[in-house]
Amino acid sequence: MKIPQAWQLCIGDQYKMPAPRHRPTSRRPLWIIVLISLVCVLLIGAYIYPARHYPECYFFASSVCAPFKDWYPAMPARILTDDEMVSRVVIKDILSMPLVPSKNPKIAFMFLTPGSLPFERLWEKFFLGNEGRFSIYIHASREKPEHASPLFIGRDIRSEKVVWGTISMVDAEKRLLANALQDTDNQRFVLLSDSCVPLRDFDYVYNYLMGTNVSFIDCFQDPGPHGNGRYSKHMLPEVEERDFRKGAQWFSVKRQHALLILADSLYYMKFKRYCKPNMDGRNCYADEHYLPTLFHMVDPSGIANWSATHVDWSEGKWHPKAYRARDVTYELLKNITSIDASYHVTSDAKKVATWRPCLWNGAKRPCYLFARKFYPEALDNLIHLFSNYTAI
Ligand SMILES: *[C@@H]1O[C@H](CO)[C@@H](O)[C@H](O)[C@H]1NC(C)=O
Ligand SMILES: *[C@@H]1O[C@H](CO)[C@@H](O)[C@H](O)[C@H]1NC(C)=O
Ligand SMILES: *[C@@H]1O[C@H](CO)[C@@H](O)[C@H](O)[C@H]1NC(C)=O
Ligand SMILES: *[C@@H]1O[C@H](CO)[C@@H](O)[C@H](O)[C@H]1NC(C)=O
Image 1: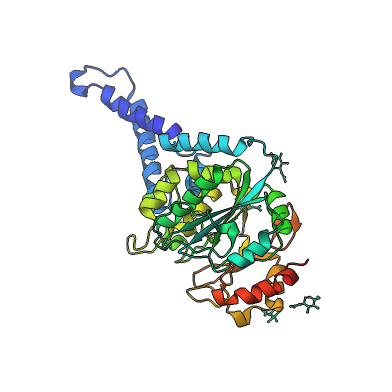
Image 2 (image 1 turned 90 degrees about the horizontal axis):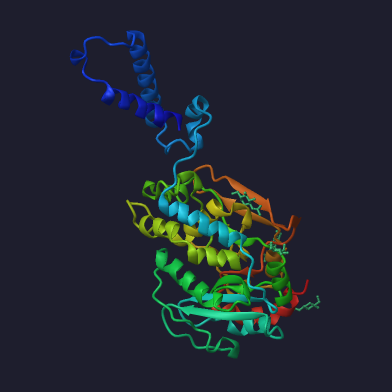
């Protein structure tokens, strides 16, 4: 706080100092006044100069303010707003909260879909024999689904329209979480789409998710146009550009994180207002940035940084690869289930690719439990192969 105080002192002195002509003699020697003025000028200069030359600086917290930091190493971080203070205490308590004990921990499978789910019969194969260890929730945003499996009947929640890329997608995720959290036995929450299929048998998925305290939320920093290029300075001061992250929306989260998503309004409002298609001539998609950024800021070590749902972007097109019936072979599924490193590539000209080993409680393991995107026509092949490809 040295600078603001010195600054105030300087102004204060100017205010307090009576005009010289009303004052017969100054008891203070001239050199003190000159010295104070000089210090003031220097401090004001130091305050303004780096701010102009490092526009990314926001107050003194940003790491790009290194030259300035060197001058005043004791400089504290930016003073938090009221909303941030509230948000931090609430989030801190949620993260350290003991859960209501459950004798019968379940996984909530939450399907976000426009209408009917083409793979209900495959999922039924996956769920059968595991009654009491899962629950199903369906948010059908366009039309009332017809259910092919009795397990899915009566599991539709009240839904609203979802417009791709907008905050309505996040709202639907929150609606699913709010429904699923009502059952205190639900300890893990998996978000799936209509084109998702299981890659493993139920036991494997259950042990994989329940056996770790990490949530599987995809999160990486992309300096390119499809990453930081979508950031808006309107998100300041709470969300700085260096904290902006990207990731696929298909999460598998633990209960505390599910609560945290519902408890957050501060960061949610920032993304609702300033991350949307055609915002300031840019397209920002809240479903790709809100949760990765939120968790990067509030609990970075609590997330795996990869999604447990596989998708293949390797063709480099606008949409990921979608599998037709003829693509679905034992070899393809074995290939996907054997992947044990997560892949990210930046969208700038450098196209920097990173492979990170998928570490589960510190040990390298296959990354994926689910996969997308599959055409409905792939159903019969998947059912036919299911017992084979899920055998470990
Ligand atoms: C997760 O955290 C809870 C509370 O800290 C602990 O009791 C539990 O053993 C942890 N589970 C795993 C799988 O690490
Ligand atoms: C995820 O990435 C963050 C850095 O953004 C890191 O701090 C954290 O440890 C990573 N999570 C795991 C489980 O490695
Ligand atoms: C499976 O992986 C191998 C080795 O990476 C590759 O040569 C082959 O084309 C893949 N097959 C399918 C069906 O993806
Ligand atoms: C399933 O696996 C067995 C043994 O590995 C093999 O003989 C059989 O042909 C496989 N079935 C299919 C449909 O791939």
